[in-house]
Amino acid sequence: MRTTIKATVLIIAFVIIGIIVYYSISYFREKDYVSINTQSPTFLKDKVAAVYFSGTADSTGVGSYTVYIDQKGKTSATKGEAIEAGGIAQGDGMLLREDPDKVEFVGKKNISFSMKEKVYTGYRQAAYLPKEKMFYSLTNKGQEKAGYFSVVRWGNEKKIREQKVPGFYLTYGNDGKDIYVLGEDDHSMNRLIFGKIKLGDRAIYSKIKTIGTIRDYENVNSNMLIKHHLAYFIFYKEDEATMTVVPHVMIYDLQNKKLYGKYQLGTFKVKTDRIEDSFIGYHNNFTIHGNKLYHLTGTSTVFVFDLKSKKPLQSFSLKRKKSTTYEVAGIDFRKDAIYILNKMKNKKEYELASYSYKDGAEKSALPVKGLNNIVDSHASSYDFVMLDHSNK
Image 1 (spheres, one colour):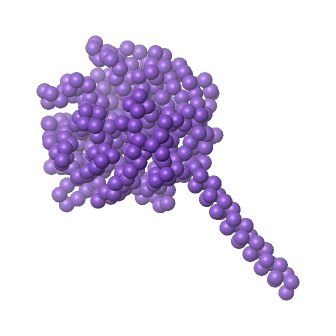
Image 2 (tube, rainbow, N blue to C red):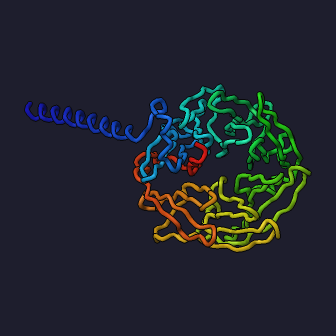
Image 3 (cartoon, helix red, strand yellow):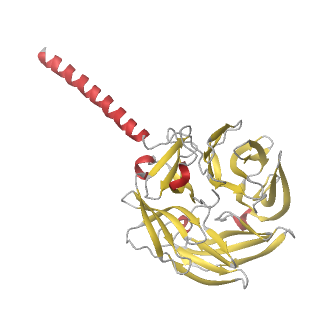
């Protein structure tokens, strides 16, 4: 009898301890999150970067995390529902983030908008259009009876609109005013169409021209940058037998509606047994400064291409001061440096570092504190921005 009582008491004790531990952990983990309703207009003032993590569209309970990194490397986050390959954007002193049926602004104005359409996968495409003083995001809605559709949301802290637009997109970008996309042709899945989305009271999608076949562009490995009516994006030619990769830049003339040219940036080999390790995501892995194009590969090699002579200039590797093996969790090309959120493999620690455009030398490295304690281990990073305070 006494043994039974003791066993019962022990069981109750373990249950009570378990409850206390659970709620204690929940309490301290909640301290990592920042409620959208309680943030002050100066919340972003001491923040230097933001990164978007999310579970996959079919994951359960993982959600999404928009993590903010301050000047000392300390992290805080807003938690939401998952949008796989979702994006964030900054502009006018605010940061835009999304849930499947909601758009939120953080910073100068803190406000959220409920959306009619529910979206669960994106294109890592959210941006600010300075010429129009508005934000936009592109997400993947999926196949419907009338064809394949995406969803564009656009506006600012005063109003957000949304609308379905036709197409599934391989690459996308903007010229500060309009959105340009390269998508599949619904009537012939073997053809691709350059299109434009003009935003106003409604989103107006128009076809620019049908170009090439999917086979020509199946290894598109970047977003699209647009300069002076020319659209640039990166595609790879890969040889799995030799693990050799040849990156190219494709240039399309939007004004004259024709291919301007495609040019080889260089060649490199993948040292792992996965050809997919050749590239870093499909977003933000190249930039244009003046007459030079810079492209960062998955092997930490930077290729530099002269846009005037249309010839490769040089290539160099990022020179990290620590010998630790890194995994890139985010890239942002700024005027002064290449900024990368590095995840140290095996240690599960993060570091925010900057590298020179001249030779890849490490310029700075900030240890990021607490990020691994915030983000679910099943969530992946999909977007990263260095916060610009010059417009505040």
